[in-house]
Structures are given as C-alpha cells and as structure tokens.
Image (cartoon, rainbow, N blue to C red; front, side):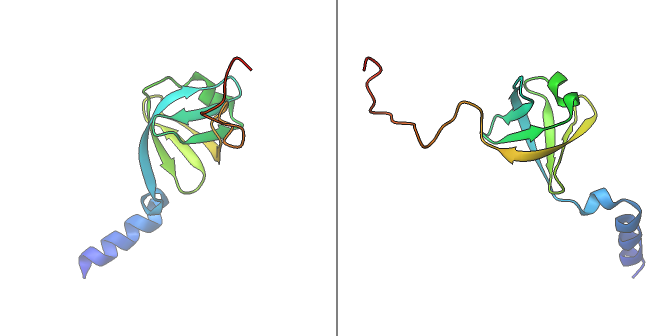
Length: 99
C-alpha cells in the first residue's frame, strides 16, 4: 500500500512522468525550422531555439506537443508537419525528367 501512495505522490509532484514520450534522432533542421527526424517524421517549431539543434541529437517527442533535445538540454513546442520537399500528390516515379 505504501508503494501506491509513493507512486501517486510522484505523479502529482512530477507530471512529466505521466506524459508519454518517444525517443528519436534528428536527421536535420531546415531553415524554416522544421525538425526532420531519421524515422521520416517532421515537426514545425515556432521557437528559434531548435535552429541550433544538430543532426544525430537525441530527442524525446512528448505527447503534449513538445520536443526535448536531450543533447542540448532544450525544449520547444512543435506540431507534426510534412517533410519539406516531399510532395506526395505530385510524386511520380515513372515521370521522364527530360520532358
């Protein structure tokens, strides 16, 4: 019973324990401040802090809309977006580049 109380106190005192998170690695950050991950996901941030993040930095993607760069010890708000340059509507692998 003591363990349940201790766990409840930890959840109340440290809400970050209750937030789900995924560990990922940065592929690159664009000039438009899109954080592109090695797994192919991308996140748009309005916070210029992430412009200084480097390829291969380890990040945590939190369910509350934040990304934490564990190497830089910085956090930004970010929203899922498309990878810049990817245009699924106009991609045609059979197209002839000479036309």
